Length: 278
Image (cartoon, rainbow, N blue to C red; front, side, top):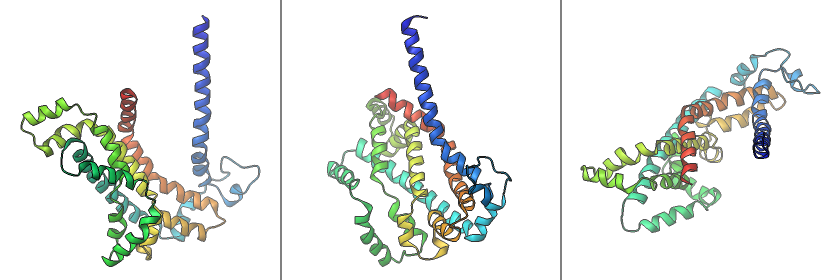
């Protein structure tokens, strides 16, 4: 083996080992969480720590439903997250398309205004937004949770970067075929940026699913509380029963894993195309 090949082999081996160590470090908390959700209280507090439960205790999952109205919290999170994500993507696609491929007065000003909104912390807009929702009678409603969170500059600018990569020749060809602005968007832009839209959907779903501050502020009734708030109540009810909290955490991340698996191919394709463009 030549020195060059040996150097490349050693470098690739070192890179592989480093990535393997980092991967193990990243999945360690998830593996520990899943295994702990089946442990007994004695196994959780055992020292040195026990990896595999001595007895696979499925009752921890049932205990979650007895301590808090977990199904209600789960349903509230699904309803609000799906609605917020869907509306966010629709609004962001329309806004990104209009800012990139249409010309209208004040376009640059609106883009600059949206860009500056990314630097405004939520604590600044929280009180005005709450007062507005209160005046509209949206306290303790699904609409009160959903509507203030359906616009996001990050998602819009993420899609703008991909929409701008669509060749102008394709758009001009669609216009020559008789497509108007809506036809160009639906037949050219959106089909050629499915990976980016899938990535934005994944990020949006994850952000909305774990949203805590705004649902906590806008709701006071149990029937409208979402899952992150419910987990807070569970920690109060089972402050010393870590195995029960781990069981609740496992059930909480399931929708995120399902969405990730569903959009995995589009996400990888989007990242690959980003690297090719750079």
